[in-house]
Image (cartoon, rainbow, N blue to C red):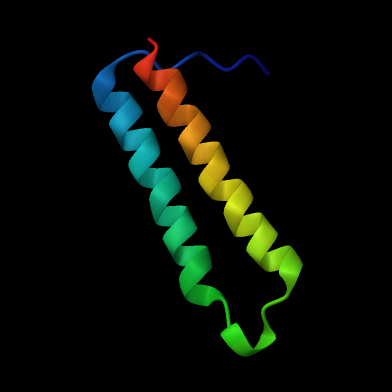
Length: 60
């Protein structure tokens, strides 16, 4: 499947908002008493992915 790059600013902002909302939903669903290191690692990966996408969008 070929994915077209997101080039217009409005679509970029929409994409980032959606990703941040997904992150917040995951964060809200985590029970601190049952959270394991893998869960924290996954959250950090999500943040890193969002940061990478922000940098890509800034360079376009």
